[in-house]
Length: 334
Image (cartoon, rainbow, N blue to C red; front, top):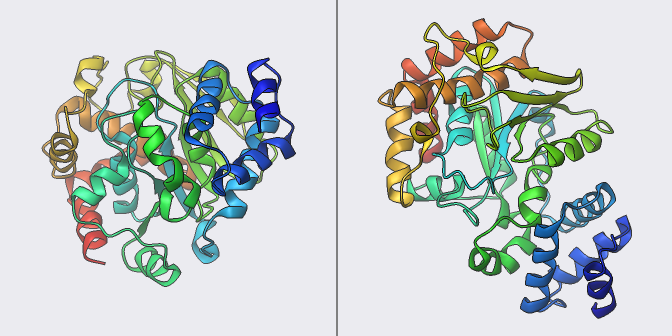
């Protein structure tokens, strides 16, 4: 381990196998807290290579608790961001998931507690009374009866529980922010992935080109890891690279350029839960609604061949009719 660390400090990169072995060693408790912090620090100073990401991912998936959702995952989607953009937004991606499910689609959402932000998707759902589960029958029942299930990362990836305290103490993004979107145990074939850095977006793009997944990797050019209507957006998909101007993203009748201040989350989890419920209850601000609806629109457009305009209308109906909030009610009682 000392030799590996020394090589990393000398700015050498790991082979796929070395990266895989490193994660396995971590999972077995053979890497102490100081070494774990050192490794996290190294990957905050540079991005992992494609080989390193592949090795880390392979180790995490091999060590994970398995769940078979094959009958659903071809037509299901995950909406997720890498986090770590330092913007302290409210929980946009999670809200978009409920709107997509309220529009009749299947959502297999993968998430975790916050580490570099105030409130993660797991903090929201736990605060609302949701009971995390890795029981396959329960998850299938949720997808069948509710249209959505939630996979809390640490109960599928034990290594995350091992280092959760260290991640929280660091309070900044780590390599696990980068890996998180790649580790959904339900393996939905569709994913809307928000990335906080253009270089990292390109790395994901190279990785996803070698899969059969239907993906859209989005990056707001002012640094957000989701579509925020605060700036133009770069998008990578199986169709190639595309640049969306703010004008193209203003899909609804109300044309708004969002001020970043309008997207700020609360000062704690309780405040963020209130914002979450307000938006789902149709009581969000114009700006909050438009940003959430835009992300849901892009997700819906990945699942059907309809236009952005028509999918925006579907998303808006899901929110305004209360169907999105009804998904939350059914999920909490399932």
